[in-house]
Amino acid sequence: MVGWTGRILKVNLTRRKAVAQELDPSVARDFIGGRGLAVKILWDELPRGVDPLSPHSKLVFATGPLTGLPGPNFGKLVVAAKSPLTGGYGDGNVGSWAAVNLRKAGYDALVVEGRADKPTYLYIEGDKVEFLDAGDLWGLNTWAVEDKLQRIHGRDAGVLVIGPAGENLVKFATVISQRGRSGGRPGMGAVMGSKRLKAVVVKGKGEIPIADRETYLKLANQAVREGTSSPSYGFWMRQGTTATIEWAQEAGVLPVYNFSEGQFEYFDKIGGGAVEKFETDLKSCPLCFMACGHWVPAVEGTVEVDYENLAMLGSNLGIGDLQKVGELNRLADAMGMDTISLGNVLGYVMEASELGLAERLGVYLEWGDFQTSLELTRDIAHRRGVGAVLADGVRRVAERIGGEDFAIHVKGLEVSAYDCHAAPAMALSYATSPIGAHHKDAWVIAWEVKTDRFGYSREKAAKVVELQRVRGGWFETFVGCRFPWVEVGLSLDWYVKLFQAATGLSATADYFNLVGDRIYALIRAFWIREYGWWSRQMDMPPAKWFKRPLTRGPLRGAHLDYDSYNKMLDHYYEIRGWDREGVPTRETLEKLGLSYVTRVNT
Ligand code: PTT
Image 1 (spheres, protein in one colour):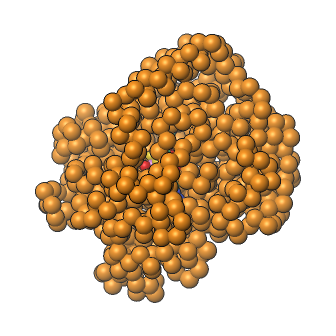
Image 2 (cartoon, protein in one colour):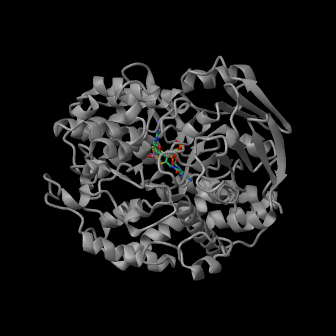
C-alpha cells in the first residue's frame, strides 16, 4: 500500500502513552483518509452514547494520501469527533503545517483519547512523542500560544491550538492554526479542551510516500500551472471569498438581521471591494497557490477575514463597518471559537431582544450594537454570566427561553452564511449536511440562482447529492482544498490522476463517489446510533424560512414551501437509498460494504 504512511498515532492522555498502529489496508481502500478514516475510527471505537466531553471520547486529526504533497493545495487535515454541540458526528477542515508535518513524521492520522491530569501539549517529531506541560499556556489566546510554541520548537513546527473558548468547553469552540485558520465548527475545540490538551505541535522530516514520484510531480506542476492561468485567478487573488458578499447581495441570499432578509444596505462597506481597498496582507495554508487569507485592519490590530465571517458578524448583525466586523472576527480567532455560530448566537439574542424575550436571559442587544457584541463574545469564551448560556449554541438557548422559530440551525449546528428563503436546494443542502448546517458539503446555491431558482425538482435533489459526493467525499478524504476546483475551475480529472500517481491505484471518479456514499451512510448511522432514534424532521431547514417571508427587496414575500420541500427530500432519500425517515436501508448498507452497521432502525 503506497501513498499512505500506513500508520496511525494513538495517544492516551490519561496514561501518557503513545503507540503507532498499522492502518488496515482495507480501511484505507474503503475510506481513503480524512473524514472517511475519522468516521470509521469513531464508529468502531467510541462507546455508544459516549459523552463527547468525557475522557472516553476521541479526537481524530486525519490526513489523506494527497496531504502534504505539492500540487493544487494539499496542506489541510480533517479534525473530527462526536460533537458536543449537536450530539452527532462533527468535523472541520483546517489548513496547517501540522497536516504536512504529520505525514512527514510518518502518520496518516493522530487519535487522542483520555484526559490529561493537568494542562498538556503534545510534541510529535517522528517516533518521538512527548507530553509537555502547558500550565503556562492555559488561559492564553490562540495567537499568543502559537507564537510561544514556535519560539520554543522552531518556525518549522506545525501547531494546532485551542483558546479560552476550547478550555471553557464552549460548544462551538474550534481548533486554530496559523492565526487565521479555524476548523471543527461543531465544537472540536471543546473536545480538545475537555482533554486538557492545549496544543499539538508536529515536526517531521521524512519523505511522504508516492507510488510514481516522477509522474506525480509532473502532473502537480501542470495542475498548478493550469490553475494560475485560469481567467478567474486574478480576481480571486484580489478578493478571495470576500467577493461573495457582493454576489450574495445581488442574489438576495446574504444573511441579514438573523436571516430575516437577503439584502443589506451597507453590504459594500464589508464586501470584497472594501477588503481589496484596505488589505494589509495576504496569507495562505501551506503549499497553496490561491491564498484566501485577506488581512484587513480591525479596531485593534489586523485580522484575516473570509466571506462567512464578514456576513455572519456583519450583515447578519446589522454591523456595516469592516473594522468593527474585523474586530469581532479577531476576538473569535483569538478566543478560538467559530464565527458562524457566534454570528448566529448574537443574531438570535438581537432578535430575542427586539421581541422582549431576551429579558429572560437578563441581556439586551440591539441590532448593530458592536460594543455589547464584543463584550458578549468575551463572556461566551469565558462562560461568564449570560455567556455561560450562550456558549451552548442557539438550539439550547432557544430550548431554555423560547424563540425556536428564529434559532437558525439544523441538528444543533448553526447555519452558515446563505439565506434560503428563496433557495430551496441550498436549504436541502444545509438540512442534509452530515454535520448539521454547513455549506461545505454542498454549496449548491451558485448553481441554483443561475437555474430554476424557486423550484423543488428532483434535479435539485440530485445536484445536492452530486456535490456532496465531490465536496464531502473526494476533497475531505484525499484531503485537499476544494477551492482550485470551485474557484478557478480545475477539473476533477486532475485529482483522479494525482491520486493514481500518489497511490498506484487505478482509482476512478466512480470509486471516489462510492467512497463518498459509504461515508455519508456511515455518518448517518453514527447519528442514529448516538440519538437512539431518527425521523425526517431532523432533515428540516430552520422554521423561519418557511414561516416568515422576506419583507424587502426584489424577492419580497419569498419563503420556502413545506409540502414541496418534503417532496424534494423524498427525492433526496430515494437517490441515496435511504428510507422515508432518512435511514439507510439494509440493501444500501450491504451495497456499500457496511453490513456491520446493525444499529439502525430499518
Ligand atoms: C469552516 C468555516 C468557514 S468556511 C469560514 S470562512 W470559508 C469561517 N472561518 C473562521 C475563521 O476564519 N475564524 C473563526 N474563528 N471561525 C471561523 N469559522 C468559519 O469556519 C478555510 C478555507 C475556506 S474559508 C473555505 S470556505 C474552504 N473550506 C474547505 C473545507 O471545508 N474543506 C476543504 N477540503 N477545503 C476547503 N477549502 C477552503 O478553506 P470548518 P481553513 Mg475551516 C479566520 O473548517 O470547521 O469546516 O469551518 O478551514 O483552514 O480556515 O480554510 O468562506
